[in-house]
Length: 267
Image (cartoon, rainbow, N blue to C red; front, side):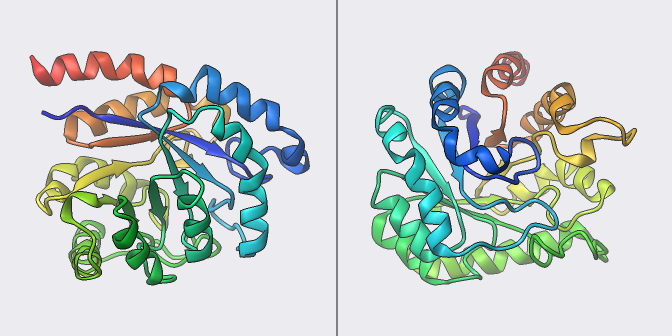
């Protein structure tokens, strides 16, 4: 089997559900440096987001998103041996990022918000993550009913990957993300993780992003910063089920767990 990759998360936002910095996020450049040098530097790729897409979040302008990215641009340049992904669905932001050293796009709208992002990936020959989401971040958790969540996701990706390929993106540059927590019920999220082998039948790499999300809080009393063990457990199960990329907040802890998981898979 190919190596399971770790995608570390770095949010440059005031309002992300786990590591939003509050109003002081503009002043926390040294904190971003600490994260890059101590934890994130061991990831295979670092996914940087400048707009929160937590449930109930509101869209920000292109200008504001680029301004937030510019805050840490100099810090990123100090770690130019690392690979960076931009977590955005806006063409202008994606282009800015790719022009400034990023090498992947992570699009929660799968190219539906602005289809120019697909042609941009084709022209730059960079990978793109296409994610499944019902609705948008503001309203996605208001209606989480499906006849079959897995059938819905399979149909969605058959369509969106076909569109991506027709836009000129090579098959090997397409990664699919079933969107844990994006318009899904608690049971839906568990069904998705159980159904990773089914999603693998589509023939694309699969990214799973479940780190510290609320579905892990079964007892409804654990804050996001206390969900490390639950995240590690479910990421391990995802890896065993066939996930290719794990998107995580805690790179060092995830890498330690992954060593054991890979030993089990390869025995």
